Image (cartoon, rainbow, N blue to C red; front, side, top):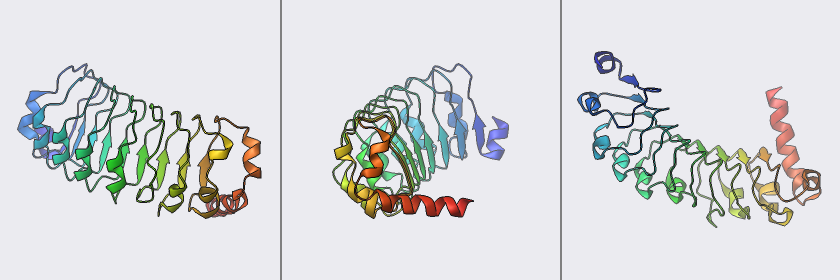
Length: 229
């Protein structure tokens, strides 16, 4: 704990913890990085709000069923990882995390797209893979992310408004319930997306190449590959 006081970083992963360590209150105002991943935590205490200097919080691989609204007090947070828990929703109060760049919530039980993410202007990556999402908001145009992972959900429609996401380059929607008719022509033809993953939906992958707008997508995809080479 003394080291954490000096470095601002503390790793308590793989400690078989079933309760949030009360001892952390002593350093809560000084920690910038906290890793409590791979434990057996089921809840977070209200005093989580005292970790006001946190930039990175890893709570993945626990047994959390909900996140408290008090998390919204961590306004300096840039990275929040809650993958592989038992979450059915993310609190809308997290809209206050205006500095958030990474949000990982894959492999939970989320039934609705977290609408607050549409207001986070610094968000670069959003991972909601392997949840229970069946739909996306009709207006996705304000989503600021570079990368959106929606693999292995139950989504049936690709909103045209994804084409207006200003920075979106990578969209993963593999293994959902999209019929070919719901692959947005606007997303193919008019978006900035240069990496689109749609395998495992309700159509043969080869049919995608015949869709209107696919040639425009292919131009973007090829241009990016040339730059990387």
